[in-house]
Length: 180
Length: 306
Length: 101
Image (tube, rainbow over all chains, first blue to last red; front, side, top):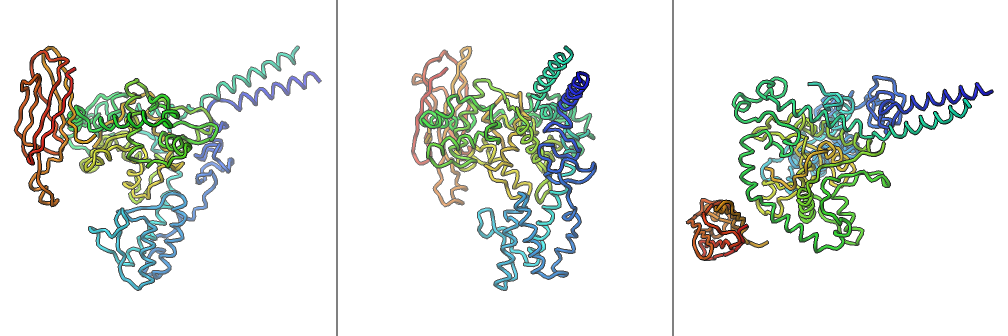
């Protein structure tokens, strides 16, 4: 009886010591499943090593990285309504993730709005706005086709970049992956 | 008897465990020291190590313009640390810097505002922000702390990027510099460490139309040029804020000062991304990470930059 | 704030080093034409101590906005006031004083 008791205590001791072996593996800022996401933020703490995971440590089903941007965003292939719809769909997510593109004063949302406006009124051009939201005096308006293709590419690229970045950002950190 | 010994050993082990687990900033320290090593290695001898660190620099630049032998504290003055031409102009302007009158104005704002004085009895607090609020489990930046202070008193919040906010902060920065304070950011819990990690990830993730991460320019790219601009280094980036940018102060001197939030949203735009909001969690955690990287360096704010 | 001249003057071993920044838009003729305003710039600057001139300069549109000047002069002047006056094209003038440290 006594022997069993002391064995249990010893076992408990061993576990306690193993559990608090400094700042690795099982501590909140450690990474037990080696997926690049700290334990405290990891929603899927038993991910198979080598799997690509998202911000919350769970496997990314590689949908965004598999998209064929060229195919999907081609107006000639899909028609302008389809392209702008694709753009709007993915840009919504991009915006929610905080990765929406902004180029030369125009956010992607503004590109999409510009295209939709032109489609409604039958216009052929989209006017580019400056950072104050007024028509840019230096940049010429672009064709609706160009704007739609750009909006679509921007939306998909933003998400694809985000997904790709998750797996390799640490490679640039001196002290956490960067070699020179 | 055996039971007693086992019991005490178990208790000792557990206490040792909790004491050891106080090292929540272990990874952060590792990152910070590695960054210092990297910067010192980079600028130790630019001409000799050109293929490792300066693949695109010309002979002329390496021989005549880029300084060598730089150490930790030298990096606080941005690209003037290594750009000899830039340093010359910088020293000239420092004779009579345009922000001096704004610091005086900041002192006036502080002395005449009882609400702010009550929230910040000691103005030499530049080195303590951002900090991790353990009760709310979130990062608090100086900007958000000032705004919280005045909104709690029923006033409208101030613009986070320039104007009164930057002017008041310039007084805090100058007071901190006079009191010889150093950057002293703390990470004292697992949640704080996680916030730091998220800020670090934000810093090193490529973003925007131009697919640039902050590090592309300010870690790997530090010392190199983008057209005619020498890229400054992450080390020492936050020691001198709010910063007076000649570009911002071109038309009206009072607009020349800008907070950390003002500069970072500008960088977001330069990366081709719709900027994150100045008071977003993303921004605060990014600044938490950036400030930690300059731990141990002297506060030398406010300062002049191009 | 307004347009007070910012003056710094320090004496060391019998030589006073003074730095002054005058606040003035210094609008040249070309710039004025472009902006549709009237040209106006500082035409002379004078610094005195105890009524004696220690610095004098005739200036023109070649100086940029908020001109900064630095000058030295001999003599034991610690504690005395450096008086700095500028005059511009329109005839306006401004005088500011600062104690020499």
